[in-house]
Structures are given as structure tokens and as C-alpha cells.
Image (cartoon, rainbow, N blue to C red):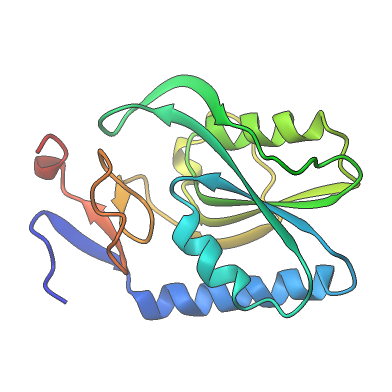
Length: 180
């Protein structure tokens, strides 16, 4: 693949695939005898989610929540908005929240708290990328993929102004690119 200008590869798709496989094994170990409800935080988690659930060999259900704290650009607004609610109730269910990246923790914590109000039987969080250096709110990650540096990342579902989600690898976005 030709690398887009202004991007530096951080994790190639082979490393991401191995990480997703490990996470699928961990989740399978814990949920094989249950029928969990996976709730993916959109938009960023959709590629991770698709790769993850195709490796699960037990019954599960799937729904989505759209929450965001980013507008245009690379800085959080600090305010989390729930734009779309899951249609399947979490009440009494074993819920696994799927998130692409835990950054400041604002969006992730807001979604987890929002779902806890529905009184699930259990609620766990699966995060592909953890950017601990930027954390403003604590987030308990039950299934963790990779820890990342305090850089703006794109690819594998992650975007900048809706661009770069389709890249198969995870890249660091060069600051010169951020305003293009």
C-alpha cells in the first residue's frame, strides 16, 4: 500500500489482526456459555467490531450507540452527546461495550454510565487502543488491545474530519496534515 503523505505507521494490519484475535479469545473464554449483547460505539469502532465478532463462535446480539465529543478537527469539545441509542435494552443482559480508542475517557465513561442506568447483569469494556496519557476521566478497561502514545491516530476506523477510516493500519497523523 502507498502511504498517504503526512502519516507514519504505528501498527500494521498484521499486528492489529493478532491483537483482535487475542481479544476475541479472551471474550470467548468469558462469554461462551452466555448470549452477550455487544454495543459498539460508532463510528470509529465499526471495523474493529466487524473483525472481532467474526472470530466469536457463540451466540451474541449486537447493537450500536453513537456518542461523540469531537466535532471537526483533532481536539475534544469536552461535551459528550449521545446521538443514537441502542434499540436493544441492556437491562439484565451481559453487555460488552466495544470502543476503538479510549482517549480522554470522556466519551467512553459517558457511554458506560449511560448503559449502567439500564441495570445490565454485567457490563465490560473492550478497547482496541488506549491512550492513557490523555485520560481526564478514569475508565476501567476489561479487554485491552494496545497502548498508544499521545499522538493523533487515524486508520482502522479512526478518522480526522471523517477521512482515513478506510486505511488498514493505524497511523500517527502528522500535525501538518491536521488542518488539510
